[in-house]
Length: 165
Image 1 (cartoon, one colour):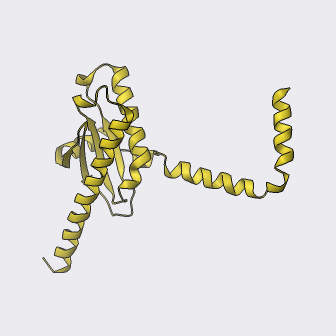
Image 2 (cartoon, rainbow, N blue to C red; image 1 turned 120 degrees about the vertical axis):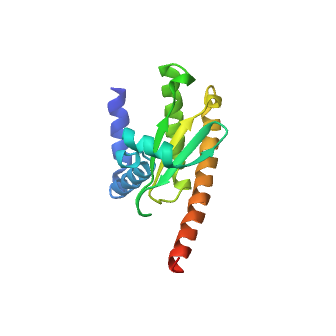
Image 3 (tube, helix red, strand yellow; image 1 turned 90 degrees about the horizontal axis):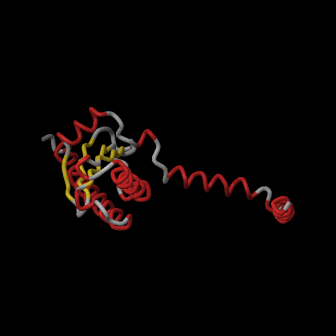
């Protein structure tokens, strides 16, 4: 009964804002989608993981390693994958680490402009037992380092192609 009273009160108080309500919900959906982690933005195939880990550039953070390759044209979204080895612990611990890394990437993926990169984040032994904030801080630093390295390499590639080299 209390729920019906709350619902009735809410409906009566929002009569004047009926038109604004769909616009606000569309903005909320847009924000949620931009911060999501859809399938198109994930590295999912085993061959892709192997190729990126084998051939990609590397950067070491405090708790994570990042491996990346430039795959496609810059307007394409970046793709990310997460690897946590069995040496780090049992399934519960590994899955907890993956969730923390995934959430940190989802929240901060805008630090890295869309350049068609494929990135693998690999947890190190030092990541075990670290807080979400510590892992997120390390991931943000790695994203910024990747952004600066890929922007400088893409600039040098463009300048050499424009000079005829």
